[in-house]
Image (cartoon, rainbow, N blue to C red; front, side, top):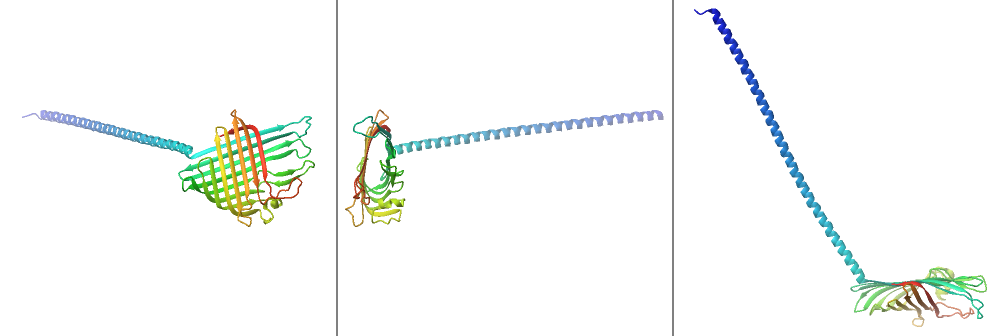
Length: 371
């Protein structure tokens, strides 16, 4: 018979062996689970790293695409700017060419001075000095069948006389402005609308050498003459033109009521500052230049449609000659002739008032510029 003590001892050893085996198995299982967990974590880390790399690559590709698109758009914008600049430059160049082709400017400005001094001069005389500013500008625009021309002529001056009374006296004062626009019908003949204005800047006086007094004879817009008409203008060249209008209106303005009788005539309403007259007008103009020699002349005739039609003609004639030498020195000659039927002028004794020819001459040397 088997000893019971040995059986018990064997059972204990078997139990211990089984227990250790189960412990080792459990440790192996736990180790295996830990390894699996580590592998899963490594796998997750790898997947996360892989995804992050792909995301970065995708972002870089998108960024590169954005940069390429931005570069393309910038180049297109630069091309547009360059194209626009080229078009603008071509437009400015064309405008400059058109301006030189269609526009013409000419004129003259000058400052003339003269002085006269006497010492023990047997024939007598008064010391005197005069300074006169004069200028004129002509602007012409012609394109296809349309033509427009504007002319401005002016002068202003004062004299100093060595006399007892009224030493400073106005010597020159003129404002002439005319403009006309026309459409060419047959060659060199234009259907034209014309407007002109004539007046003066400052008060004008009649002076007396034997007494300290003056008599006012003119001031700004007293008088002034505004002509408006529609007619035909013949311009064979840029030097000469001849204009005729059977439909003309003259507005004589005298704002100073004390001067209206002098400039309106005897049949006008002296209570109104403006006198209207319808009539017929003709105008001839010459503008000639050779190097620095320049001649400008205009002649205007006007007759009103009234009982004196054809027998009373208002005349305005202006002539300006200038010659520039040594680049800055200028010699000028100016003449103005007027004859107005409504203006009655007495003789030197203040008697026998009637229509008379009014004439003014200016000869001077000074500094000037012709263009």
